[in-house]
Image (cartoon, rainbow, N blue to C red; front, side, top):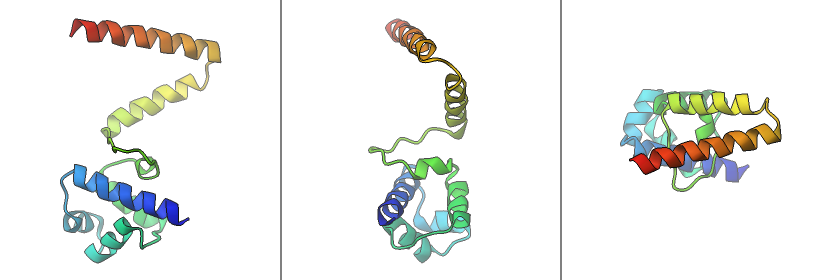
Length: 117
């Protein structure tokens, strides 16, 4: 459990910094004490889902972004994440053969597009 608390705390801090927010600014936006938020970022606090929701709202991100360990962190706009999730949902309904074909087609489209630019 401590590992997950640390991952979430680290991701909150990194996302906050990417958004050029101070702890004070985020804490105010979330309705939290700055010292409490600092403890969350350090992994000293095991937060509730309600607090997690306040923080994700304050950061304007999806909650899933806080649970993934990905370095360096790259945060996509919420709209882009929604489109990716929509596409992934459509792919789940397809066979492996169809998915491989879609990947091949997408790769060719991206390669063609990159060569033109």
